[in-house]
Each structure stands twice: as structure tokens, then as C-alpha cells.
Amino acid sequence: MKLSDSEWQIMNALWRGHPATAREVSERLPADIDWAYTTIKTMLNRLVAKRAVSERKRGNTSLYEPLVTRDKARRTALSALLNQAFDGAVEPLLHFVARERTLSDKERRELVRLLQEEDAKSGGKS
Image 1 (spheres, helix red, strand yellow):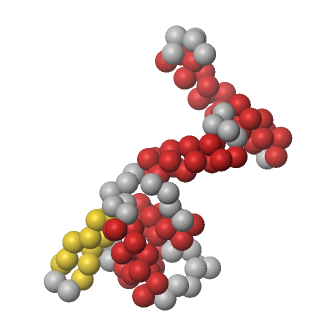
Image 2 (cartoon, one colour):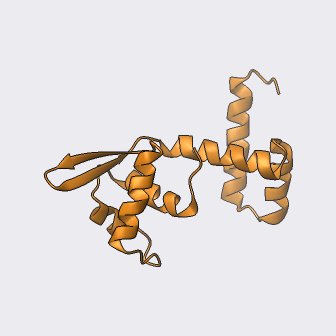
């Protein structure tokens, strides 16, 4: 499932705490986002239609809850980026990140640790 930039904002607010009302989602959005309440409700309804979010009623109030985990959404987004920008290959992505963004020492150590962990899981097979 592909999420628009606006839908990512709504999902991030829901992942921070759920279930949540539209008003609570609005309060969790970054300060530079000044959407009308009706805009937030429209986006929540779109996410319900996409089956990314569930809606249940408590009296007259709708409570929203993510049906898609953050990790699943990230995997989908990364897969789309890999396919569109890097012909589905990870190596060109890694080269691009290494050239275009300076990694801190902490980020480099974490990357090495993750690669070693994956190498150990696969028994050293690449």
C-alpha cells in the first residue's frame, strides 16, 4: 500500500498513540502542519478506505487505529523507492547514500553492526 506524504503524517500521529480521535491526531501533527479538522477527517477516511486504519465509534466520536505497522509501511515505501529509483537493486542505493549523505561515526558503527548481525544469521553467505 502506497501512502502519500500527507497520509504518512497522519499515520505517524497514529503510531505515536492509538486508538485516537481525529482531534488527538491533529494535536500530534508537527507544528508546521496547520490542516483544518475536516482535512484530517478526510485523510483518515481515505486511510480507512485503503484499509490502513480502522474506525470504530464511541458514542458520536470515531476512534482510529493503524492496521498497518510502521515497519510494513516502511518496507513498502523502500521497495517502491528501490524499484523506481535504483532498478530494484540495493547496492546502488547504498552507494548513493554513502556519497550523498555524510554518516556520523555512530551511524557507521550501527551500519557495520547490522551488517555483521545479518552476516552471522546467514552463516556468512551473501
